[in-house]
Length: 177
Length: 177
DNA sequence: GAAATTCATTTAACATGTTAATCATCTCCC
DNA sequence: GGGAGATGATTAACATGTTAAATGAATTTC
Image 1 (cartoon, rainbow over the protein chains, first blue to last red):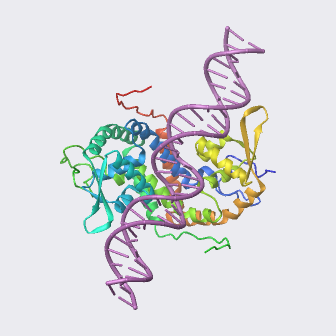
Image 2 (cartoon, each protein chain N blue to C red):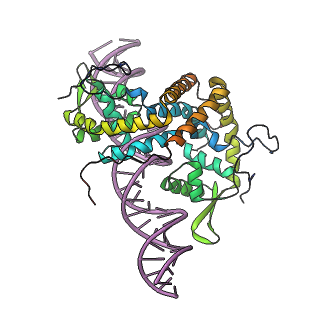
């Protein structure tokens, strides 16, 4: 019951008009896949160290972001650390329970919460930072500082290119609500 | 109880030897962050369409990978679709329940499972593919085909550069087990 | 100035990421 | 050929991603 074009590797790039139906882009060439693989290759280097210090990647992102400011509102923190609200909410609860951060209500707006890193949190950051920086230095050495800067720029450009793209709401004919 | 260097934006890049302790790389310049943001910018375009067809990003990755082969073992599928075993295991269970894939035991090895896409799965792929391709085309148009190819290459090089890097096992002095 | 609306945050629910442990089968070796 | 160890896959447990809904507080509207 399962049968398709059984070509698995190297479909020939672009000028093979042999298939019945355009066989779509080869899988490994998809942009999301390339980005995912690259990011994983990088994160694989950092995770063990973070883990040794009892931090996940996201927790580290939050603490890192907090060291750059005196205090910050939750929404802004979500933007800076690139986390969705619900994820951030959960992580802040945990970090607060571990006394790595502190939280208080905004002065003139009971809805907003203001977060800051604690002394304990700062100490943790300082413990992790050297290893983290060493890893980053090694990555830079291997890949090349210039190339790394270029990659950063290209990624930024890509992000900017897609900024105003409206999410192609393709039809399914079944609207419900 | 919370106080730090209150510089939040633009620390000056590399030659500000003013801080007490190297303030680490500015957050938005971290490579994992750049890759994450870029990937999210891309995926944001695809998710709505996939969602309209009842598929998550990972489910789509798996079905896509299955269209390229007649059948494939689970481990190999995990490698190709870039998913961890446990994730794949759960997703396959779901896709099988929805009759989008089929699964059987390998002929000469009872441990291995062989997976293939079903006719229903193929039909679904064919329904999603046009929109997916259109989005990809628009991304290519906006960013530039040449630049896109260059980005792909740089990402691949990055991945290769880090391939042999051993996961810097930093000391924590407290080994427990 | 009370109801309606908007806004910031959290909770809920489900899917995946991540590591460790389990389970079953296979291989190898004595 | 039987047991130790290796291997493929799943399950377990916890953290996060993702969307929707709920909660609580500010703002607007009439």
